[in-house]
Image (cartoon, rainbow, N blue to C red; front, side, top):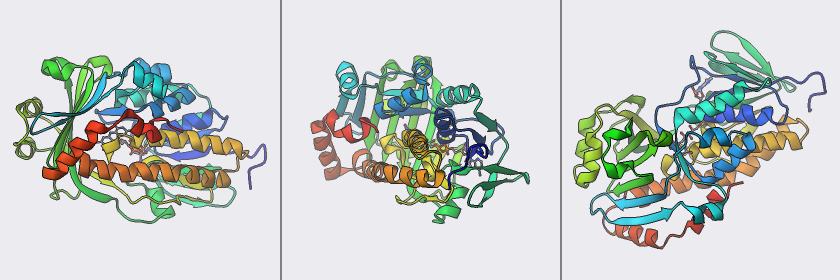
Length: 391
Ligand SMILES: Cc1cc2nc3c(=O)[nH]c(=O)nc-3n(C[C@H](O)[C@H](O)[C@H](O)COP(=O)(O)OP(=O)(O)OC[C@H]3O[C@@H](n4cnc5c(N)ncnc54)[C@H](O)[C@@H]3O)c2cc1C
């Protein structure tokens, strides 16, 4: 039953990452109060870059943070894929005027802390959003008309509903879906950011470059108005079971990339300290809401990063959830089902396409790499319309 006026409680959001803060912001714009419970002592993102397709710019516009994003993002001239061994340019998508006219929004890259900061500042300026840190959600009880959300410090926060935006290792998901640990892809990412003046001239250009090789790839692009250079090196390895934001071993990276072009190895050589991620996703599902509880972002549909769309999907989720809640006059249980029904095909497609792109576009060798080169040469920007046209 929807709450009657006077007994409306805030929606509790577990997790204050990109998905959680976007949810609070989207709900505030329909007049819905939220309490965001973040387990860490502060709202913080890893010091790395993120790519933003035109579909997510449409959401920034809805959330009222377009200008804040535009002031710190870099708008690259093109997306380029090069063969990491031969150096051949196998794909180039210009991101200039034609792209902008076609998709009505730009393609950009941004430093993650800058994106989180834009969301956080907008949340702080809303009287409808209560932000709490050091609040680890450990369990919940859906009591039919309200939800008791339990935190590790023994407190109980009562809400009209609960949104689990608690990421890949979501606790809320284990109660709703119960599908255990995420799937390890067998791919490892090393990430680093350095001042742009330390990079060779060609890497300073405003372009997203991806060097694709057998079971390896390197992506680099400038960040923060062009002041920083972002590097992400990925290779296949089953050596690691766990590892998230821990230090990587440069020697292992250099060994994996030993067949790559000197330009690639030169960039890797600029970094002494890498952060390492064991990359994971999950099988797509179509049901992630139960009663007054739903999931959002990586908690609902974690994806490998190869389409550069995980955060974009979380932000789209937030906007759709708010739309449904408004359309259903605050009846969260019905809105959560409608939200999940609208989102599962699109997010599942991103999850599955990301796996395909990782294996057959970024990491193939031999004939498979030649097929890739041939396919990419014929690729038109229109082939991304399903994604970049947005919701
Ligand atoms: C190498 C790499 C590159 C990527 N590149 C891109 C890209 O270019 N473009 C893109 O769109 N996406 C990209 N992604 C994906 C993107 O980072 C994620 O999809 C996005 O961060 C998901 O946001 P989220 O808020 O759902 O989850 P998270 O970012 O994981 O946030 C979850 C939050 O919940 C908190 N939390 C966890 N458990 C609890 C709890 N029990 N109680 C309270 N709080 C809790 C965490 O501390 C965290 O703040 C990339 C990912 C990786 C690994």
